[in-house]
Image (cartoon, rainbow, N blue to C red; front, side):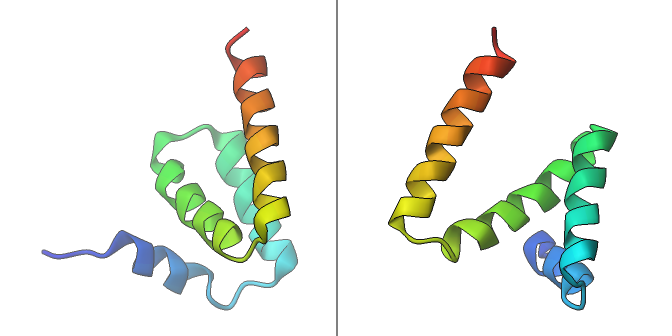
Amino acid sequence: MNLNLRNAILHNIASNDQSQLEATIVDAIQSGEEKMLPGLGVLFELIWNQSDAQEKQEMVEALEQGVKNATN
């Protein structure tokens, strides 16, 4: 079976509005389930691809700070 996980995730959220997308993100993070990580990765990829250089830099800085906070 050849399952394209990225396409399946995109299909599942294709008709979601902003509040539904936010709820998806919050639920995935709060649940802490490993199976949610690929979906969050696809959502991050969408955000990254729609961001300009300044937004990307801000995300990388926030990520760096988050990693530091999570590992201290």
